[in-house]
Image (cartoon, rainbow, N blue to C red; front, side, top):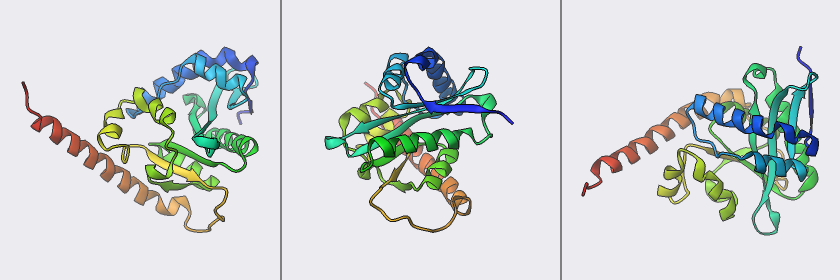
Length: 219
C-alpha cells in the first residue's frame, strides 16, 4: 500500500510548482476537457498563503495537489480548485484524501463561507457529493468577475460566454454550511443519471454551437 504525506503546502513545497502545472495541463489534454491553466507563480503564491494542499510519497515524489481561494464581496465563497493526482497514484483513494484536506482547510479559514467547485469529472462529483456538496446552477455560485476570468484559458470558454455564463460543460457543485445535512440516495445510485445528464448537456451545447458556426455568414 502506498504511503503519502498530505499536508498544507508552505514555501518549502514551491519546488513542486512547475511539476504541478505540467500535470494539470497534461491531464486536461488527455481527458479532452476544459480546465483553466495555472502558472507556477500562481501555485507558488497559494503555497505561501497557506491555501494549498500537497501530497507526496515518502521518497519525496509529487503525488497530488489542490488549492483554495476566496471569492466575492466579504469573501462569501471559497473554491476548492486544481485537484490533481499523478496518473500512477490514481485509483488509490488519494484524490478523496486531498479533497478532504482542502475542504477542512477551507472550513478552518472560512467557516461561514459557501464552498464550491466546477468539474467535468464524475469521480470529482462523487467526492464532492460525499463531502456534502450538491449540484447547482451557475447563478448560485459567486458573481465575482475575477473568478470567471480564470475560465478564459479553458478550451470551452466560448460556450460559457455565448450562454451568458448560464451553461457550460462543467457542473457547479456547492457546499453551504448553513444547510442542514440531508440524507438521500448514495452517489452510486444516481451515477447513471449524472452520466446521462452530462451526455445530454454536452450534445445539446455542441449541437447548438456547431449549428451557429454553420449558419454564420461568411464575408
